[in-house]
Length: 198
Image (cartoon, rainbow, N blue to C red; front, side, top):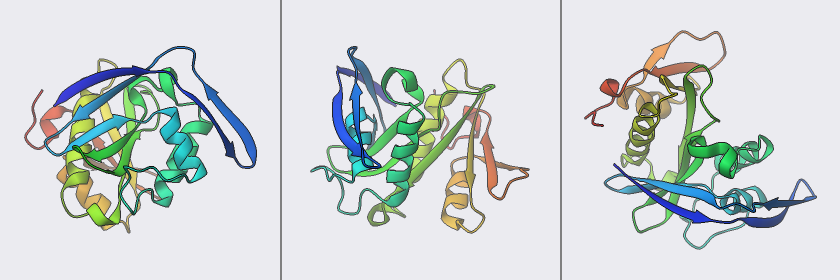
């Protein structure tokens, strides 16, 4: 896995729930990508989040991207203020085929709390069952567990979502008891990951 870094400043104006929104940053926003064999997990910029919220189409997006879950996640990130420097390395990322189209999203629902980060993910239907979600989840989980303030990665999914349950198990996550309506999974160490490497 490789990490690359870029810097850019962001200024976006758009409409959210019929309210004009301006996202300004006087400071460069760090942007880093995680690279896998077939994918780039690119940090989502404020402009990316804005495009998802307002339903804009970007040229390098797969025909079936975004899905509703991607748009909902972008709005949650915006409302929580998890953009740019505040999100740091624990923000949302676009899943892009290396040299190609954006095919999904993956990221953390904020910085670590008591050593745990929660991961969320989505791959468009046209790219499902090709191993992209597994590849992205393993790379992001490995990245998280390499951070000094992260002890575990958690994920939640509906019991009826058999594909997500299978993905989490394949990526080395273990089911844990949880009192809510969702199923809970946890990854405590890189050794749980398939083909674990540093």
